[in-house]
Image (tube, rainbow, N blue to C red; front, side, top):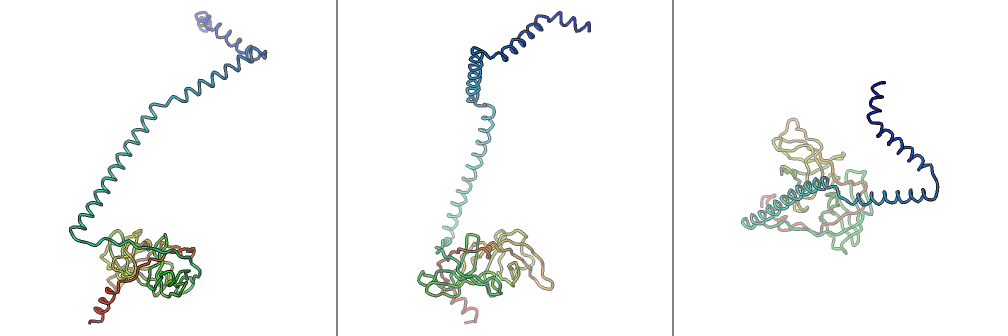
Length: 277
């Protein structure tokens, strides 16, 4: 207690000043005269103005940090663009050296699904485009999700599409990552199958499967689906590869017709080679 009294004696001026300021503020806040209200109003306005002015002052440290991050991102993006540009130029040079033909970009024709069969082994679609629109048999059908099938019957204004989920459907396909190729089939289940793939070939779960260059009907690199399971068939040299289709056939309402026909010369020479002529 004596120690506290000594401290009070030493700092009594500051203690008294603090008490007087506190009493003044209490009296000021409790006073409601017009003069006091005016002082309060001017004080609040001044404080608000100062806050607005201070808010305009940027946080220099934070801006510097953001600037460094954006500069690093810009460097990475610039490097990526440069590498992509170089890869494109290299691709063009190699194609020129090898005199390779570039991939042909195909034209598409939109159509609506007006009929659908999804409960049979030979599932089909009916679309509202036909010969009057330039549609012909064997033209590929795709959607924004991937491969749908091919046209098998055409009338003046309609066409029937043999879907990928049709037991008679066949197409050459490849694993996008490892370039392993095989034959795409369907046997009535929930998944597609990639056949004729040797056990030593590199195929993994999660690989994307697309159409291959070996097809005379479908353009290359159209997405088919994703590998969901890979097993080795007992007593054979091949793998059993399951593929989840990328297209949701149950909700399919619009499709695109690839207005390209098979190369008749290629078909003819391959048919002659097959029969040994």
